[in-house]
Structures are given as structure tokens and as C-alpha cells.
Length: 533
Figure 1 (cartoon, helix red, strand yellow):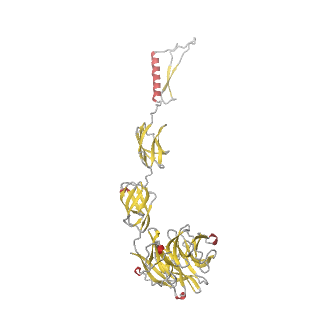
Figure 2 (figure 1 turned 135 degrees about the vertical axis):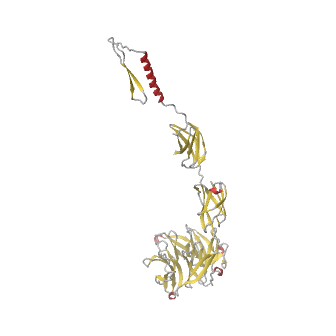
């Protein structure tokens, strides 16, 4: 028998070391196999096996530790809130979700996670913690919107230094952490709780402004409105006969005034056989006839369309609306009759809708923007038992209408966008010889041919019969027209020494606030400058 040869070969098929023992065997003719073994051979085999097994042990996977979450704090907060999660067996491979939104992990230990609440809607949600294939869902977090909310303010109007109380939610209890603005002006916060602030109104121009509250980066919802009252007294200085109708047409009355788009003052005249419209440059006082003579008609009112710049002409005698084009210098008829009945006025609202006043029927006809034709005509409002004389629009979009009854008693109405009308002045028995500070509906008014709303919301109107009319003003109060007062502007102490011969028939205001009054039978245009004290 020959000695057995032993070869030891390293396998390359595994990452760890494995040794294969190969034994060459010799066969005798008897077909019996004999292995020559020695103590040395057995020792080698035992060592190699132990080496191979030790490699397998080192690379086998151990059972993972159990993930646990026990508490989290705070229980509620807003987006960006830092949340601390307490538990067991956290690793740097951990992931945290709130309502399926992944949170940013800022700190990790085996027992604590610190995360930032991701963006989510307000309400309760599950905190989901994952480490490998393990997951916990036993913790909750409630999203709360801490944005300041303004519910109300009191008072809603006043002046600089007025103390205002603001009621709402989510204010800071530290006064200086609440940034309160009225418009763009920052108010002083004197007192603060989570639901109430007391502030001092900062300086602002006269007008109405939004009141907002900000805490940190959050600006409050539902801003309230605060109105700075005009406590000044207006002074009306009148330049009588600022423009006198030239002698070549001195047999005519003035009927209307308006401003053209090029800045010139336009006026219409009527009398005898001539009906005309003129434009005058107030810098050079040069005048131009823009609408030629018409016969058998009364050119009662003219008005400029602010959108297209064309001049619209209301002819009472023919119940006709014509248009003068400043580009072509030509006049063309737009509407004749077709629902017009004793045409008194034509005006445009802020949406470029056209309105025509029909005196005899007591109606105002509306023509939608871009469709100034008879087929598009709508009856906007009918004031029962009244003859409407003139209309204007205020800044809120309300239509203001001056009307009379069969006895020439005067009335002023507010008409809202739905066509609903409300009496705001006239209908009473008190003759206006001084300012009326009580309800304007106690005043006795007469026929009003002229009407205008100025930039401050004051309504200018004529009051009286032909030749004895006075210029009067309806001044809105804190509650608008509900507590308005009537001002008689021709009092001597106001600088306007009207002897009673002035007969206003129309009003217009320029961009600087100056008022121009067409004085009909006196054939003049008066200039009224508004000052304050």
C-alpha cells in the first residue's frame, strides 16, 4: 500500500475562507480501500474544519433589536415645530412620517429622535417611525394654525391717536411681538392677550384702510377696516364768472359742463335756434366749437366716455343720443327714440355701461358696455311717482339720482347695482337756509337739474326753481348717507358771496379737485376751489 497524498485547496466561491481536503486513495486488487491515517493527518483536518466554520459564524445575520416608541412632545404645534420622540433601538437609518409627509430628522440617539414637523393641513395625524422593516404608529401629533385672526375692531373710525380695541385669536401676549398696521402705518400696541389687543392709531391720510396683525412670519386673516375721519372744515372759494359765454351766443343758456380726454373743458349751450357745444383750453382760454348748430333741439347734457374718449350728447327735444368723435371731429347719431322718453341725462359707470335718464317715465335705461343699441337696452330702475332729472355715480358704484314729483319738490336717491333705490335727502318740510345737521330727509328740496359726486364722496346738487337755484352739498357721515348733512356752500363766511342770482345746472371736477359750475341763465361758468382749515 502506498501512502495517501493529501492536498488542501482554497475555494474562491465564497467571501470567507473554505478549505477543501482532497485525499488520494490507492486501490488494491482486492477492491478494498485502505486509508492511511496518522495522528498528524487528523489534527490537520480538525483545524481546517474549525477555521472554515468560524468564518460562517462571523458573517451570519443576527436577530434585530425590537423598535419601540413610547412618547412624543409637544402634542400639537404648527408647521416647523420641533418634535421629540422617545423610544428604543433608534438608528441613523430611521425615517419619520406625519400624514405621509417625511419629517426632517435633526438628532438621533438609540432612545431619542428630534424631527421638524413637515407641511400639512391642520388636524390630528399619526407619527410613523421606521427602522428597516420595523414600523411604529402609536404616537399622534395635532397640527394647529397659529395665524392671527382679526374678528372685529372698535371703534371702526376715528383720527390719529384714537385707541382701538382689536378682538381675535392667536395674538402674542407680548405686546411688541404683535405688528399691527393700519394701511402701511405701524400702530403702537399698548396691551396684548391671546384674544385682545389695544393699539393707538398711527398717522394716516383721510380714508379707509385695512387693519392687519402679524406675529412672527404670520400675517393675520380677515383684516378689518378703519376709517380716518375728515375733521377738517372745507372752505369753498368761488371765482364768479370765471368763464363768460361770449357775446356772439349770449342769447343762449348754458346747460352742461364736462372735461374732454385732452383736458379741455367742454360746455353745451342752448337757446333760440342754436344748440352748440364748445371746448375751451383753461390755460390759454382759447375756445373751439366742437358740435355745430342744431335746430329744433335742446342739447341738455354732455358727458365724456372715460374709455373711448368720445363725447356723448343728450338731446331732450328729439330724445336722441349722439356721439362726437375727437379724432374725426364728426357727430353721429347713436340712438333716437327707441325707449327714450324726455331724455334728461346720460352717464357711464365704472364698467363703461351707459345709462340714459327718461324723465316722464321716471326710468333709467341701461345699455351694457359695448352694446349701446336699442336691442340691448334694459330698464335699470323705475322710481315710482318721480321725474328723474340727473344722475351721477359715487366711488362705491352706487347711482345717485335727483328727481322731482308733480309739484317740483326735490328728492335725492341712492340706487344700488341691483336697481334697488333708497331716499337719502328731501321729502321733508324744512327749507334750507342754514346747514342741516339732522336727517337730510327732513329737508325740503326743489327741482334739481345738476348733480355730481366729488372725490371725497360729497354730492353736489342744485336746489330751487329756474333763476333762484342754490348750490348745496350732501356730506356723508360716519355711516355714509345714513347720517349725512346738507351744507349750504354759498354762505358769505365760506368765501362764496352768492346773492341769489346764481342758477347752477351742472357740475364737474378736474383732477386737482377744482369744481366748475355751469350757471345756466347767467351764461357763465364759476370756479370753486376747495380749501381746508
